Length: 321
Image (tube, rainbow, N blue to C red):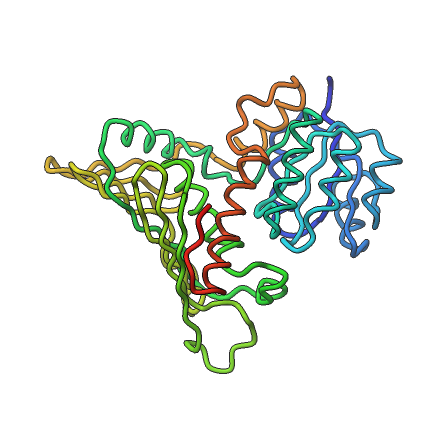
């Protein structure tokens, strides 16, 4: 295969990042862009070439593609993925991959049945400091952890929980995913939340929450979320407490090991988002997806974890996965 021919569904902020990185990586051809606001697709065409569409079904029927990128709001997932599967094309899907657990499972089953190569947007899995964290944790007994995504309130559809799933789906999903990547699968979720911190707030999502996670391995943790601050992102990552010290992961910035001998700090030496995109493109080129660290089926489990946390918030009851 020469240049990998790509189609794009959704042309918002996350997709623009992928477009910049794919341009840097090279070896691809941007064939078509689709957005329900066709003017956005046309704007992408002016920068990158290709053809603009308002209907992804039309794009898939008319263009010769090797793979598709999907970057759309949480509430819009489902039909686009099924259309790409029906076309027999590999796809990269931005997180969160779905807001409905049953449909996420159905799509994962269709992907497996059709042997489709997939990847999703959990780029932190590709960080070299996360490789280091796995190495350090392999020889340690982990007791528990505290996770964080604490910052301000984005705008637009994000503020409507029926469209975004709230902060637990849209932001803290990265830390839920990292916890799964490091500690395995969760068996029980219990969540609490509060509102009323911001006067006259024009949104219906929780302003603050805490989610208790019990893992099958015996590890447990609490994931804190906040979107009420006025200072932007103030803390995101994991604090992991082990028998012989602690390990602090700060979102894409640093990993710090603290023991009786002192502190050791590592900073990322790689661009995880470029590595994520290049891994997917190479998988499409070779037909081998074994190096992809977050295929759709795995990302669906992270989405289901966020869905369970939201269900616990709504009912006040623990959810057993």
